[in-house]
Length: 475
Image (cartoon, rainbow, N blue to C red; front, side, top):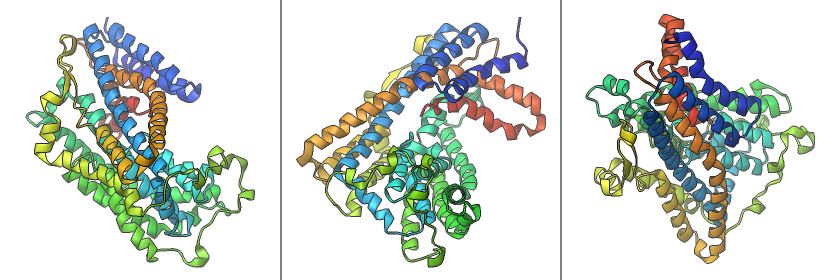
């Protein structure tokens, strides 16, 4: 007996609901919650949707391979960050920001919005919060305000984080090989299809992102300012819009020309190169009497202050260096990414079959898992870390570089287990279709389409997000 679309749609929502309830409502760790959600998704796929066991197993294997790719990127990004901490480059980068403007609103826009977007584009996976929040605290922000600013900007740049991983891996691996998708795109090469999705995403995010810096400073002044006023933040609206456009315009252009690896990374970098000199020259800066500062720390509420609050630049190690030298490893990342993605002979060499790991037609299904280790951004991050080792003379302090690897490994292991469960869960969710029923995301889409009719386009993004966000929620 076939189930109706209403019952099926409720069952398809169960994995998402379980993740939400266990992690958000019951405060379970992802390590505990994701095995439950994965097993539930597998059981639904086999016993309700009627998916072949081989199909489900292949989806799990494909998910594990995709998760390992992501974890490799995570490892490289965090290793580079820890290397720069040990060399002193991170301290130099922090210090460089404090001399731009005394106004906390301007500092938040430049550091959280522009620098945070650059870090999201180059590293992703929550790294902006790990870098931006301590940076803001180090220059005098309440810890809670710093975290708020760092999280608010995780919107516009996030789809192109870690050199485009959400588009290339989330969309590319998630939709690749799906019969209905391949039929819809016809003769269009699949890489071009993914490219076009990235281009469209950039326009949508850029339009919404125009107001993100303004919203961020409004929240800072409303909840952490002396006068508790949104308007105090909105007074710098001209500078906020200017900084927003300095990022979003290059962001859209790059998405339409270079591809999904670069919009956030190069958009953030270009934005910094435009906005910082302008701010130093006083462009659109508040008058001296209108400069916003936080009250003295003794007036801060206790919940604003955390263990992060007392972290200082004294904790940073390494030598003093010039700003260009401090930034040089990230410049290496940007240059190598551009070369490896835009120069066809280099791209073909890195992706050649001899350097690619592939498991074709897993368990006799149409699902194929493959990875090109040298093409994955994680390799480039590791190369940049080695570059910093020599360029910043860390070879004289080998123990410090070893510590960077040790710290990175500890962080990586914590992220590995839940991600190795979350991505396979998303793959099973997407590949749950059978001769009887369409896959779970398509069932949700059909139910929503039936319910809302002609206004379906307003709800379609929610359905897409429900599938793809399963592998994002753990990050």
